[in-house]
Image 1 (cartoon, rainbow, N blue to C red):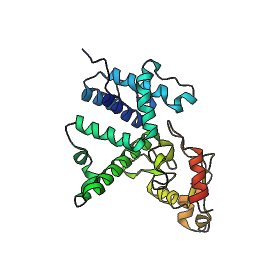
Image 2: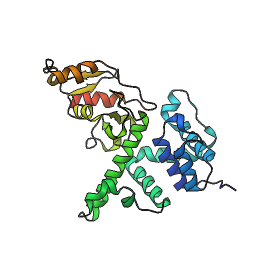
Image 3: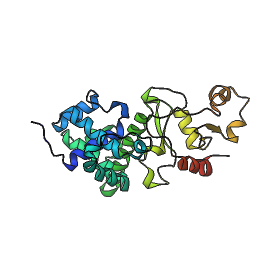
Image 4: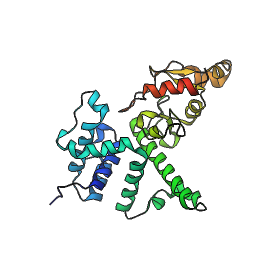
Length: 256
């Protein structure tokens, strides 16, 4: 007989998955949902329902009039509110719980991005592990939000995609893991965006800096920059870039 009461850990793991899945995949046949169901000893349908509960308290869905499943919203709302108050701690905790459920450690699970930390000690290594795991989580959220496609080119090869921060990681701790602060870009445009050579206005159109425009006679400008000027980015599945974050980039990073 399936369990009825959900523990705090189970709700955190369901929320972890909610943030990584497009809304259209929150059903019992999605492999990630089946995997979590097996891990928790629950049915895929029950996991899907919990994700629907999270959708019912998600401001994005509320604003667009999509209700989600309201029946269990009182159980999931405290987790949602806690995440909004402390994204970095709850995100890392959710990944740590997941690793423990899988009978491993977070260091082993993420060894491909933590392999060079063996010489660090104490608080330094703890802080670095948390940062890298959270950055990996952010990448998963952003790629899911853009259906694993570059928002400018539509390239859909995950190995060639980056989760670009609009407000840089170092500049605003509260928004580091906010999916509205991320855009999925291929490396050329990620670097150009990061260095202020291109930006995105509040109409979600790409604009070019004066440093790029002085290169109008070059082949690389004709091939890679002229075609994207004023182009509207590919619309994400769930979270649009927040306009105040774009304004920050335009005011602070973009080379006007």
